[in-house]
Length: 560
Image (tube, rainbow, N blue to C red; front, side, top):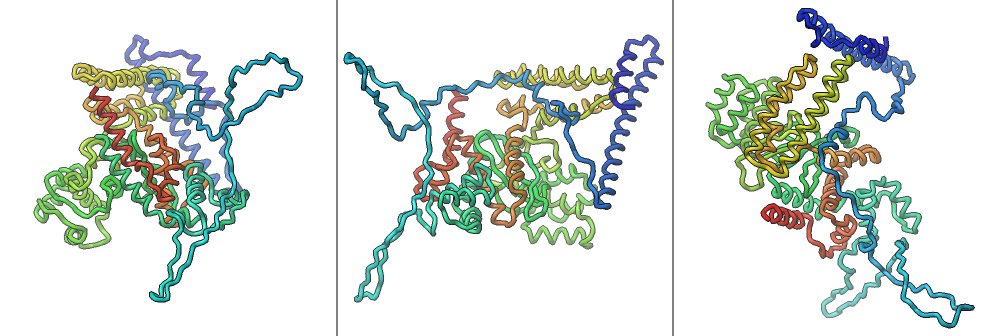
């Protein structure tokens, strides 16, 4: 029987167990509804697995699997977006002004004269009617530099005139900056960049375009490091998320670290706590601190009491370097083939404790993320994203109409509460914080008799501290959309260029995505900024300086 048919039949019955006077019958009907949900869910899972197996068999036979054709309906069954519900709670965005002429730079002015032939003699000049037409010129500017050459017989030395600053190699700073912009702002492939330049008479090889993009980018790599340092220093919290990336055919992960002032990208082979720590502290892990905090972490990581006691006896109060850390692990695990996960947990505990005590690089106090394991316990506080939590409710897909109704009613209450948190952020107070905390407990203690929903509600309640950290720090966003939007940029880039091929290419990709996305947040033209650095003019302030300046402005606004 089709799911739609089941829904229609259940709806036609119009049974509400809570309205049945006989308690035994009410419980029985509720139980039957639960069984219908669980059997339907299990059946759908089996159908999906069965189709995957069929596709695998067809592929082994040299045939094609079932095509993934999306329905023409606007809302798919797998749609877990909460955007429509949240829009009701979030304040409307201000519309951009249509008046843009004042922003347009006028490069030249032309007078359009009136043809006065056969016109009256009493014409009076009344000024001009202004019409602005935007245009752009794309043409070559090939320069032959003739460097003077002098020779001194007495010194046996040749003196040669120098090229202008910024002119290096066969291509001008303008062309190099255009190549960077096409690749990292317009998301063009290298082959299309080559085709574009060729159409305008620039004779450049694909290999040269690749070298421009991937080699000699030290100045931009330092810019990225400065951006991250300034960004981490600019707010108490940082947002983080990840998405897939590929390097030379191998799966990697692209971590997005950001706040309202910047967005930074890091492509790494693994997504574990140690990898995240390297990003947050701006360098490789060099120290492991086994203080009391480290042993608290070992307990949280669920190491046995005996092992924790053994480690305490060996290194309590010590700070180990990488070599000493390896020696410790060899003593605890003489067999190198055993204890892989435990080794990692011990390293994580020491590395996190060292990170939280460091003074040579700013320590992040709050990390806003989803509920993924690798983001947990690294910083003093972790804030969770309400949108990620809300998506879990949208994944339920009940088949019983009564359960659908209960889910919809609860989600209305859920997003209404979210709206109250938004209002609190505008006018925070300790009294309102207490009210909202109590309301959270009441809302997420709800029992609906729809088992899957009740289990989901209980999971949300267990994350109260992380979800309500905003009551203590009102400047915290309620969602992690900023990091997700940053991840979307990487996804779009992956659509055009499936993967980077080399270490240099991967580093360049991360570097320029960081610069371009940060420039966008700061209202800076990416092309002008890149050209300023490539030409070695250095007339524009660095993005890190702009982050510092914007942070000061925000502080003054809040103080005012």
